[in-house]
Structure formats: C-alpha cells, structure tokens
Image (tube, rainbow, N blue to C red):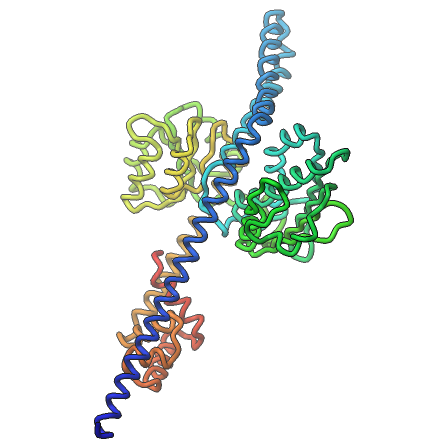
Length: 485
C-alpha cells in the first residue's frame, strides 16, 4: 500500500484502538463500582443474619430479663390496690413511680431487641455516641454474662464520644468482640471469667479497649485473625472478626489485636466528630407536624415537645393533614403507623407521590419488621416504638431537622452549579463529562476525535467559566449537578 494511503489507515486504526481502550477502562470502572456495591449488600445481609442467630442463642436469658420487670409490675400493682383499699392514698404515688420505672425497663429491653434484629441499611454519615453503643450491647449481653458466670465490666470515659458510624453497625462490632471473649472464657476452666470494656478519648480518637482473662489467641493464627474463615473455636465460622474489621474500616477506623500478658486485648480506634460535647444544644428551627388519631397521645407529645421549644402542629389524621398541606411550610413529620382510612405508611407513600420529601419519624405500638422495613424504604428517619422515650424522640426530630436543612442547602448548591454548567458549550460539556470520568487528555482527544491541544483549549475555557482549574473540583461540580437534589 502506498505511504500516502498507509498513514491515514494507521491513524484510523490507532484512533479505533484508543477508543476501544477508553471504552474498556470505562466498563472496568463501572464493573468495579458494581462489585463494591454487591459486596456491601452481602456484608449487610451477613451482619443481619449474625445478629438474628445470636439472638436465638440468647433467648433464655432475654426471657428471664423480661420476666423481672413484669413480676415487679404485677407485685407493685397488687400492692397499690391494697393500699387504695386501706385508704392509704399517700403511699400510692411511690408505687406508681415504681410501676413507671419497671415499665420503662421492659420497654428498653424490647427496644434493644427491635433495634438489634431489624435489617438496616448502614448510614455511615450518622453520628453515634460510642459510650451509648457500648451500653446498648451491655443490655443485650448481660443475661448471657450471668448465665456464663462472667463478670462484664464497663469503664466508660466521661462525657459522650461521638463518632461517625451507623449505631447498629457499631454495636455489631462491640457485640462480636464481647461475645468472642465470653466464648474464649469457656476454655479457661477454674478461672473467674472477666471481660472489661473501656472507652476513652485520645488525640482526636474515640478508643475502645476490650480485654479478657481467658487463654488468649492462638499464636499460630494471630497474624491472620481478621481474615475470613480463620478461627480458634471448634465450631466457629471465622467470619465475625472479618466482618467487624470491614465495618470498622467503613467508619474510617482501625481494629487491632494487641499484645497482652494474659487473655486477649482488642482495640478499636475511630475518629471523633468535631463539636464533641455540644450535643446538648438542641436547636429546633423547623415546625413539627404530628399526625396521630389518638387524642391523648397527641396532647402528651405536644406538651412534651413544647417543653424543649419545638413548634408542634397536631393533626387528628392524614385527611386533615393533607387538606392543610398546601399552606404548610417545610418541616418534619411524626406519624403514627396505624390509623383508620389512611395509615401512616400510606400517608408516607402519598406524600412521596406528591413530591413532598420531608423527613419523617414513624411511631407505633404495633410495629413489626416488615412495617419497619417499609417505613425506611419510604425514607423514614427513624422508627420508634410506643411508649416513646422522650430523648429518643427529641434526638430523632433534631436529626430530621438537620436533614431538612442539609437538603435545602444541597438543593441551592445544585441549582447554582447547574447554572454554571449551563454556561458551557456542547463540546465543553462533553470534555467536562470525560474529565469527571477520570480520562486523561489523550484519552479525551481520542474519544472525541480531536487533538489534545483542542482538549486543553476547551479545558481552559471550562476553568474560566467554573472558576477553577482543578480536575478534582471540576469533577465535584459535575457530580453535584448530575446528582438529583
């Protein structure tokens, strides 16, 4: 073939080859993202199965723990009845106080169980108090500790230790470590088993140390202790610590097995969230819309929330709320799940269909796992069981209001960025999309059949219009504009 014809053919073949390479790289990136998402979903299912399996093993201890407050309630109620019969009304007040305390104790146990077994979609941006997570695990495992005759000792640091982690995932990590320690102590006959869980704040980190006085970890598996299917137990799966490590890494933390003269010593370090110790400042700038068909519940919740400065507007049912919706400013919703005609879940779905995405808190005395799952699928911020703990409700409302503020800020930023990108020409938009995809200048040139110099010219024009020459900032703006506000 003559050189005059050969050169264009070679250029065309090179362009086709480069385009093929670019397309392959794009496919590989997408495939990697899909695999990461699939792995995350598998980890979530494994964590849920692990919690449900552990709950079955703890059933007898939990039954005993629930029997205690129920027995106390029965005894106190019978005593109160006798006091009234004897005309001793003054002593009834203390009986009622004890009844309230025992009812709350039973409700707390059930709340921990519901939280533990419900399937969750991890929320890595949530802020959780490490000390609260430790206390939650203690409530779950204390019956088992008594059954095994093991001392479970907590040494919690002063004040909250806020970390950016999903509460259930953090409790899963602590639960795995404590329960592993319990099982290790089964292999130390003649020793009074003791598990110590200690928390502290050190140099911007929340630190959890867990020690036991058992036989320790077999030296042969110490180096591989966090690898899947590595276990020192006869009937262990070897997945608990591997899962814990993945969850801790998702929280931007570290977990390690440390050297100890006796027993095992695990340490978890998580970054502390800025603003530590400021959690008591409750800023409620948005209205709260309470929808519940029970008048007594409405009155009680309105009174409770008004004491902390929350503006509450109560509705007797979804129908009256929907009738007033058009004139209501954005706020957060507190919905009862069971109401006649239109349920709380149906109201959620109707609001979504209307394009109203206000944060919602669902409360119910009859919630099951399916109802909980459906509420979260519809975008619920939290699912609280009656009787509702006042601090849980206030915390959930604060979280909902923060979400609404953030959503409006993001919508404003989205609109501003969209206006900036609307100023780009068609070719500049194509170049920016490829920059956001991680393409190099040569790859962009090959995919658009232009010269690298032309790409650089477009890139300079994009930078002038967007006010930045940074590829990372250009990518952030492109992603922001192409993400639904």
